Image (cartoon, rainbow, N blue to C red; front, side, top):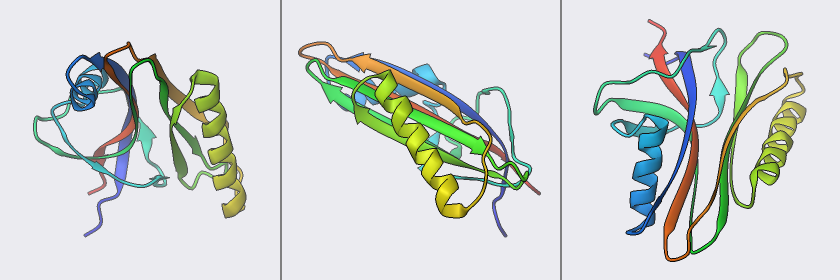
Length: 158
């Protein structure tokens, strides 16, 4: 049996905490609407015929496959995380790139564009213009922060 995704959504969040970077991550997951899932990181392939759907709530505790970019920082760091995805022009699926950096929105967007371009080049395929979702945060002094972006698979072929 193969689990082949047929639907996905993209979400993002950011948060700060005075306690720990784990608590900032947990709150960023809440802002992204995926805090009650058991997230399983997967690599970066969108199967043929898989479609983007609006974000939705998933059952509490569900094992949830996702491509996850997260960046944690502290004490004034400028952090960013992002996801870019692009479909192949031949209609045969697509690819996802993730980025997590110390730096701002322009830097994370440029990093994502470079990664998608390299995926296209090494596969010898043409891709549509990528969709890019990012979060950027300047972490407060004496605090912790987290930015994240995720492509979340929600349904599978039967």
